[in-house]
Structure formats: structure tokens, C-alpha cells
Image (cartoon, rainbow, N blue to C red):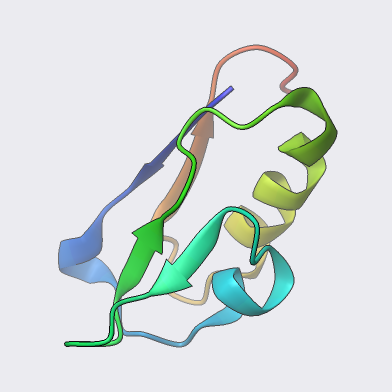
Length: 68
């Protein structure tokens, strides 16, 4: 799995960092999403998909293997 984000559409809601802190953070400068691991191990794939679903601006996309 690979995680892609569109920072240009991010509004800094922080749901990704709240629900998957192993994978996402927010920039100190502007509050926008920061991907900590764009190729997470299999045990974090569900967390990545949860962050994708919860993002109110739909800026997170999970791509690749292990996709339900």
C-alpha cells in the first residue's frame, strides 16, 4: 500500500493525525497533513484506510495492494 495526499486541498481538520498518529501528523507551520510513512507495513493498512474515510476534505488516498 502507498499513501498519497493532496496538501493543496487539506484544511487541517486533523482527523488523520488523531486516528492514525503512526502515519500522519500536522505541520507546525500551517496545520496541514504530513505523511510520516507513505508505505506503511501491513499492520497499519486499516489505520490508513480509516484516515482516508474520515478525512472531511478527501485529501488522503490509499493505493495498491491489500485494497478491500
